[in-house]
Image (tube, rainbow, N blue to C red; front, side):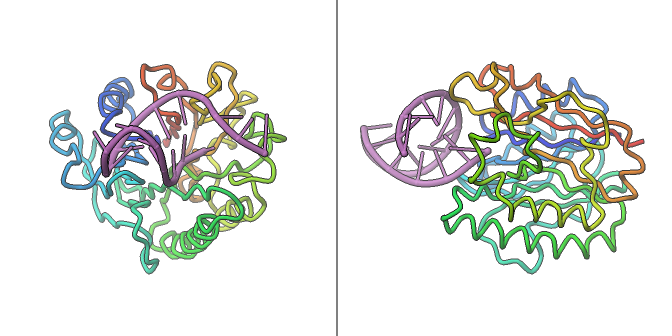
Length: 255
DNA sequence: ATGGCAGGGCACCCCTGA
């Protein structure tokens, strides 16, 4: 089976691309979506189910919103981080084919002086604390999503342009390291990869054409899942679509 | 140092993203 993540930056705009992508990737058992930007009453559940998929979602208007689309039943759905009071819909967790999928849209943080940056760090604290427990009860666990963290300088097209800002700051990278300290493994870095592999490119300034991007979308796997993982790739094709999302899918293959 | 795209809300300029 394959599991995947994709920040679609509005499911209203991107639903046809998502359904096309699923049709073209028949091995993908479950796809985690971020930034659906849709409130639950207007979520396109009927269209997705009519295309033959199961779906679970937690949305809000304008901002955030997460969902899981799957070819198998979606069980034990949990919305947001248990015990962490959050008005924003950023996490959806569910079990598909025996794998515990945590689909997350980690806050951006805006800038290091912003309240949103403090929210990001507190949010990451809560996520780490909860995942530590969740991994106990669900050894086959994957954390997939838009982390808004570039873990290493090689995940940034031009570190000089980004250093000193969000996405690369030391506290954010330490949070990423704490996730790894739980035993979670960056699936992408388990395998040899092309240099300058990115998952996001700014809409402005022909960034995609210049490959001026960041690797901020990740799949982290528990030890039991990492042992089953035989590949992890970034699929840049959807970034070439008409009206693309600024992010592109990441896919992990589990044997 | 700034703005540049894109989406959505709201009513056309503003907020947010990364």
